[in-house]
Length: 235
Length: 288
Ligand SMILES: Nc1ncnc2c1ncn2[C@@H]1O[C@H](COP(=O)(O)OP(=O)(O)OP(=O)(O)O)[C@@H](O)[C@H]1O
Ligand SMILES: [Mg+2]
Image (tube, rainbow over all chains, first blue to last red):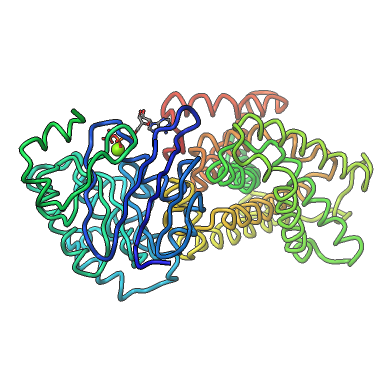
């Protein structure tokens, strides 16, 4: 038993066909921001899904907060204190903003005070409480997805490309929010395409290529490497 | 057609529309949560109608008192059927569930025939005298059907809108994986889906039996308009099924003044095709 929030050990798995993950290992310890970068199709999203039991793990183990969660049911993983914002389809479109947050707080029954704290972190959402999530802009939707995840009061938050398809101004704003989330004592493991901006705010960086972790280092060290773009492109 | 005839047909249409809606909501919700067309829904309704008959004859209850018994009994039966049969096919393709639900339809129908025989029954014999308001004849039974349906639908609406489980049901209908990720025990939601689908089915069955006569094919015969109601309304959207049910009920009745009533099912089909041409995902945007 360890204090690590998340330990992924030599995980193999995928979607029925050949394995997409071919021995991925990583660790998140305490409230730190860990950024995963890597080329398209490297298996970054697949790794996130495998943590939440949405992809079959055929080898290796994943443990979180001292529990073995390998191939566990997603609702039990949420119960253990993990939250996940998928890359796509990360809000309930036919539910209102407020109801989306209620769903995030499903396990907590109802905690109005905590919901108010979420609205304080994402003030744009407070003006749209009764609007359907499906009609939000991309940026608002991303805020809502993070708000829904935070309603679980997680120890560890998984974010899959939270800034994808956002306007440049919103990218910085969103990444700053993630800094605020860490300050609440939450560990963050996130996949990010905006490598430089994300690493600038991260504690550690991980480069993932072809279903494996190719490199792992302090974010500052990774940022300082002149060959970062090649690493990122999987060269 | 005089205005009185017209209004009279509208009243009949609302009555059958209410029954289609009660069945259509279940079909729609089950599709939204489990992603398959539940072909046994008509026979589940018939089963509920016979449960009410058993309560009426053995306990000498009025129909309104037998209704909750039939609803609870059918809900329990629906949960049991899911537990024993459908649950094994959660990961299977929808067509597998479609076929197995057809099997369940035959099982339920045979059970009804074995227990109650193939003949016709009525809940209460004797004739009821209609109220007459502005030359419109309104049967007490019709009043009971429409008032009870409104009460049931309001209760269902409050459940979906305000309860934790109701929200979880809508969330799961939107995106099952995201619901799980949010901590929803989806198997528990499935159990409640069957409870609600079964209870509403029983109500629809009892009301159709009250309006006509019990026989083993009672609600199998209205499976097409009920599916049409669910599809027209936007499959997976229970409120759409209510709108779809009323639309189909009313247009079917109105059509009887122009064409042979035997063509009623064809009318339901034509409405469905017409609405889908206009809005391919139904009145409310359905699940895809
Ligand atoms: N649902 C799925 N079923 C089958 N194969 C899939 C599925 N989702 C992804 N894949 C395949 O798995 C591989 C890894 O995909 P994944 O989405 O994990 O990559 P990624 O690193 O997140 O890429 P991106 O940067 O584009 O988001 C790809 O080859 C992809 O085609
Ligand atoms: Mg991805």
